[in-house]
Amino acid sequence: MMKNRGSGKISTKWVPIFCISFFFIGMLFTNRLWEPPESGSKLISSHQQNEELKVICEDCGTKKKNKDDTNVMEEVQKTHDAIKSLDKSVSMLQMELAASRSSKELVHPRESSKTSTQTGKPKKKVFVVIGINTAFSSRRRRDSVRGSWMPQGEKLQKLEKEKGVVIRFTIGHSATSNSILDRAIDAEEAQHHDFLRLEHIEGYHELSAKTKIYFSTAVAKWDADFYVKVDDDVHVNLGVLASTLAHYRSKPRIYIGCMKSGPVLAQKNVKYHEPEFWKFGEDGNKYFRHATGQIYAISKDLATYISINQPILHKFANEDVSLGSWFIGLDVEHIDDRNMCCGTPPDCEWKAQAGNVCVASFDWSCSGICQSVEKLKFVHEKCGEGDDGIWGVKTN
Image (cartoon, rainbow, N blue to C red; front, top):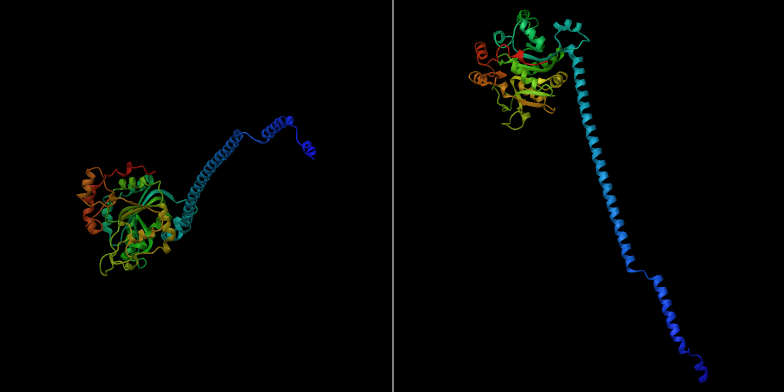
């Protein structure tokens, strides 16, 4: 029994051998399965590099995308500007076409034979048309204008031909056909050849309508850069006026004058009463900005706009207010030029001596030159630019 138990024991001489064997086996397995710490660091470093590359690539992509977006926006802006320019050109062509179509209706029948011979021919190109608003009873005023700042006879024709400056007295007709008033104007026209007859019944309370018809008739007859309206009791220096207008020749939709914003007069039986005062809000409100009616100028596109839309343009009681209202809502540049509303001597005289010659002079208290028949020549002597003023201005 003891013998069998002893035979199952391992001999002590094998113990060292087994120990050495197990040691080497352990080393073998440890080398194959265990990775050194350095390998883990390399793995983490590689991962970080990949992430950094990814961020860099994303950043490059973002920059490229931003650059592409900028280029797209620039192209969109260029396209937008081109469309606006094209739209402006198309609008101008449409206005000119409409004005041309309506020209036959706007010219007075007495000139229809002349117009018919010009059918298909372009209108005469000029620099400015100056319409002097006048009335049947203003013969002496007209003569005072002719004797001061307005050239006569051959000089008037030369001014139109060489400088493109057209000057005409604008007047309509009496309520009675072929009345003595109309015949008097016909005789005066035969003598001076300086009238533009309008299809309009004369009357003080019809000045807004007369203004529309004047611009429409002038647009139908002349292709001008500017159209001016001036009263027959205002002094004008033609050279300074032409220089002022030439400064704005390259700009569209120009409205030049002495801009004001007077009170809306709701009281009846007062001068400049506004029957439609309620349209301007509460009592005491003022009108919108507009040029005073003694003299103002508008560019061709605005005159053409009036010509096309005259049947639907509203007329207020005061002509200058009406004109200003027609441009509300339009992209119009208002030029406030105080040289167009100088006072009579000594005001305009002092300015002329200082080298700042006025475009126009009148008395605010009289809405024109007080007693202009007697005083206009005096104003011309004191405040005039000289007879050669207009001839030194480049208008062509």
